[in-house]
Structures are given as structure tokens and as C-alpha cells.
Image 1 (cartoon, one colour):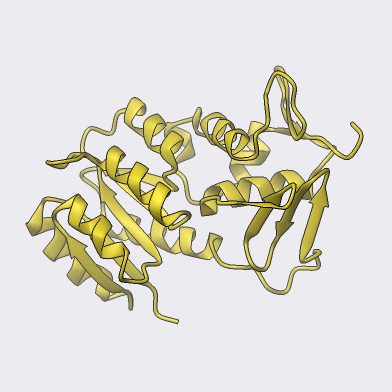
Image 2: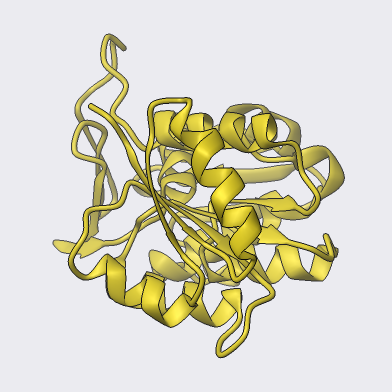
Length: 232
């Protein structure tokens, strides 16, 4: 099925170039130069992935991302930042961005990021793994990409879902950062080695896991993390 993208950026020349370029890869592309209008557009249109600029008038990309996550849940979001600063990347990840790309960038690299995230957000057929896995009161459905805790559904981004999947499939094992980084494809991890820690912090908030008294994810100081099995 053809995927639909929404690009939100106040640079109208960039919007025109990106739209033409991305359509070459069989994407349906919508563009909005005003972030508030872009968020309104989401209410009446099905979008598979959003490309969101950070530096915009009215509200910046961070505030737009907050609204998107609050109103539209888990739609994958790639953030574009002109400054490329680590602080921008941390804030974006903490707010729920799935990936980031500093400007200027090669359009082909953006396509590679889009393809990686869309693959990650789809169920993976053919694997000999259970469709549903339950540990403690946390339940993950690999086919529907739904997660619940105590019967209450939890909304995760595709990257958060992938991280939880890796943890639950390896419950009881200590996983170092290199293993986690290798398991989460698509991010520019080499230039931002704190990304995995920020992502784990974000996941803990979603599943109400206190790092000081963890029920699910325990930090193993100097090594990595372990997802606790029942009764551990």
C-alpha cells in the first residue's frame, strides 16, 4: 500500500523540492508551511509519517510535536533541525520523535530514514515468535503493535515499541548499549550516544516504571539494562 507523508516546514522552496523528490519513491506527499495548519490537517487525513522542522514561526517544532503526540498518538515523526545541536536532539527524543536529521541533509538519506521507520512500524511476518508476549502485567502484541499494562492500552511511537520488543524478547538478560544500538536500526546513533538512555527514560514514563524501584527495566550500572522476568 502506498504510504502518505506530511512535511511541515516554513521553507516553501524546500517543501516544493522535497515533495517532488519524495514522490519519485512512490509516496503520496502533503505539505504544510504552518505548523498549526499541519496539525489541523491531521484531523481529517490519514498520514503514515510526518517530517517536522524545528525552527518555525507561531509555534516551533517541539511544541508542534507535543500537540501531535497528545492528539494523534504514535504517528512516526522525523524532526529536521538546522542547528543540529545535541540539546535539540535530546528534547526531540524526549517529546517522542522517532528520528532526527540535521540540516542541510541529503534527500536520499531522508528517504533511507523514512523507509527504516516505516519498516519498523509494520508487523514483521515470518518470524517464529509468539504473536503476544506477557511479562508481569505488561502485554505486547507484535502483530497489531499494541501494548497494554494492567489492561490499559499504552500508546508508543514505533521506536519505543521496537525498544520494548527487544527488551521483552530478551527478558532476564543483561543487554549492553551496543546490543540495544544494533537492535534499533535507523537512528544516527554514532553522533549521539545518549540517545538510547533518553529513549529508555521515555519508555519508562509510558509504562510507569520507577528507575529507583523498577518493575520492568532495571539499570545494571556500568553494563546496561535488564528487563525483569516475573518474580525477579
